[in-house]
Length: 402
Ligand code: ADP
Image 1 (tube, rainbow, N blue to C red):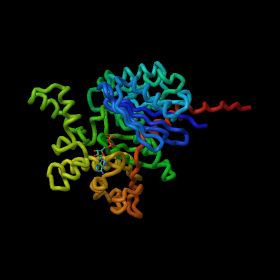
Image 2: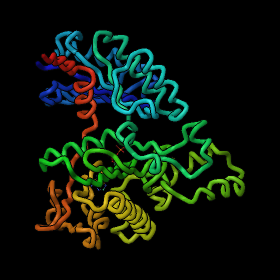
Image 3: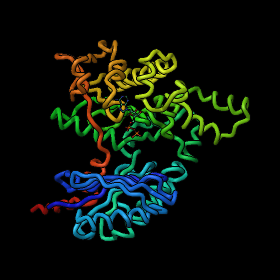
Image 4: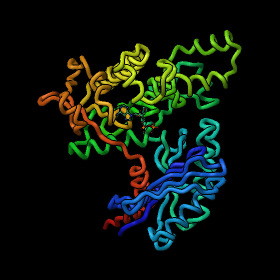
């Protein structure tokens, strides 16, 4: 039986959506609202092979949800809202409470609100998105899909920071990891393509935000983001891991507050901060090709950190079977993939430059021991699959023996 499932990703001023027919995994409509809250939101809808755009006076996520559902009805994309059986919501932080995607009832929603202490920019807005769709689609199952839950399999030694233990106990300060929905999708897709589950995978999600994950037999065993998505790799505007003493040093020198330093590390660092040009990797690549030193330096720093993580994760898993590149940079930047994989033959990683330039799915040299793959991520589809798995799966029949 076909179910209509909506995947929702609510940001502070945006709301992205994709409507699927499941389990066929067919996209019926997708799009987004931008500039929500500014009085004039931009609405983009892709359906039936066409794109519709409009500026609409919407103030918040509730109004956006109403507008979207009315538009789907008016355009005949759905005949009745009663046909939408499930809505899956991307939620940034699931803490230690949500170890998997979960149906969202009143208690779960309270928990998401409470986890706003750890993700003050994202969780409250994710909760707004949930309430907005629950009001208009009270019959539909509602499922939360958390960026953190895939990484809940990381060991205690892997997730604790070497700070006084009470900070973990009192405030939940530990590594949580993010991009879990993407890393999980990548691992499942790779297992499907290769027909094997017992794989040691290093998944490189390289977009504006970037993280890397070691996945052993389908379980996350290490990941580069930490207590927040600021940690780990260098990113478009985020610094990733730095010596923590730099933070109070700059604060004292320049009389800056904790908030101002967070702003610098989140929004003015990374590729943008080092190059002084842009946070967009395409701009950095073209500037580096025209001989700009700081652009080339930014790229060298970006790729060096990824190489270090690949080495660390191969150690963690006692070897590696597959390295996967995904997200905007991972899927499209052949030169960056080449730079990352250079001189890694000692690990068995050998890229065929012709296949790499063509963005083939498998780009390793013939006979190389490690598979190197380029796999487009699809977090929305993973969300829809999880709605089916945890929200709509038939309960297993009880077996009566004897
Ligand atoms: P987000 O984290 O915002 O979802 P994306 O996964 O869309 O990000 O990735 C955006 C990044 O991908 C940008 O830095 C963009 O420059 C980069 N990118 C896209 N295409 C290319 C390309 N051909 N070469 C280099 N970088 C690219």
